[in-house]
Structure formats: C-alpha cells, structure tokens
Image 1 (cartoon, one colour):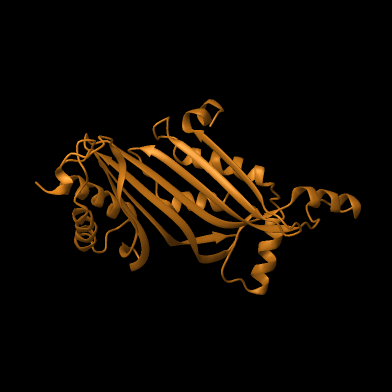
Image 2 (tube, rainbow, N blue to C red):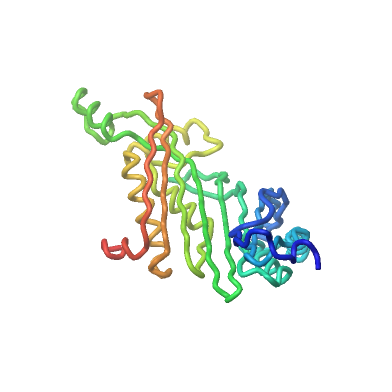
Length: 281
C-alpha cells in the first residue's frame, strides 16, 4: 500500500487539493481558424478523511492528456469539462473534481459603426460530482466608459445649454459579471457583449480622430452612475439566462477609475435569477 492510500493520523477530509495556475496553451477551433490562448489552469480533487493523500501525478496526467486529445477544441469549457471527467476517471476514490482556467480572451465588438477586436478577462470553472451533477462558474471582465450624469446636468444648468449636448467628465470602468449555475453554461461572448452594453460606451484599442469624437458624443447620450451600471448589467445578464435554474447566482461588480478624484469608486451586487424574476424580469 502506498503512503497516499493509508489512513491519516487525523481523520479530517480535505475539500480541495491539486495544482494551482499551471500555465498551458489551449488551441481553439473557430470559424475564422485556430487561435492559441495562454491559460492558467487549476485542477483540484477532494480528499476523503480515510486517506492520507491522493496520487497527484494522475492530476498532471489528466491535464496533459486532455490537451493532447482535445487539440483544437471548440470552446474553453469543452477543455475544462473533459479535464474534470478525466480526474474522476483517474482518481477512483474521489467524490468531486474542480477545474478552473483564467485567461485573456478576445472578441469582436461594434459600437455605432466602430469595430474592434478587444481583450476581455475571463475565468471559467467546472465542478463535476461523482453522481453526475455539474456546476459552472463563469466570470467575464470588460473595460468601458461612463459619463457622469451629475456634472452633465450641472454644466447644462450653468451654461443654459440643452442637457443632451452638455459636456461632462468621463472615466474608464472595469465591469465584471459572474454566473454560478447548476448544469447550464452560457457563451462567454454573449455575456461580454451584455456587459459592454451596460456602460456608457466600450473602450477600443484603436480609434481614429473621427471615431474618437463619435465615441465621446455617443457616450454622452448615455450618462451613467456606477449604480446604474451595476443595475443594468445584472438585469441584462438575467434576461440572457432567464431559462436557467432559478437558483442561478448572478454577481456584478464595477470599479470606476475616477478622472477628477484621487480615488476610485466601487459597487457590487449579488442576486439570484429567481429574485430578478420576482422583480418582473
């Protein structure tokens, strides 16, 4: 009997044991060809109170075998789900497996005729139970712009201007949406676009002068406090996943990098799909 298979001195179970942030390249097959993304992958299994440990080399084997077998998979979640299943296969003594990946992803966005391939930060996690149950966590972070409604209103009053054309200060915001669900998974790009639509305007890597002017003008047509951003984002996400299990959890957080203050602003909301439906979603 190997050491890991023996009973521990203290019979306490361990919820998660494994490798954290293993950097690997994942190749995705898309309509526009293959793309390679660097991901930090974490793989965990539980340890029963009757075991001293697990055979961690099997965890490494699960990771590498899936990457080789799934070369050019269609989605990130396909890779992770296959890894979780492989962990359950190789570690016959575990009850659950968790696989998590963090990476920078790129999507094409369009805003009033302005187009760009823009980076988003994503975190995807799958938890597979021995009884067949599966849980997903998806976190997507985008960068956008907000226009201050308060300053806009004050300037319009001071200059006796139409509020629609009154200027205001703008700031860059980082908006993150997170979904925790049983069984269901929604596309990364769909949630990213939902978040981009929940700010005054998205940010773009490249803007020519006329595009820059158009972006600023269009953003001023949708002034928002970060409170507005949180509420709109959580409502919009709810509409996208209305068919999911009613106990699905939705979290939204936004940090605003203030342009006229030496500090940042932050807002956060956590709710369930059921609570949003009760509000009339």
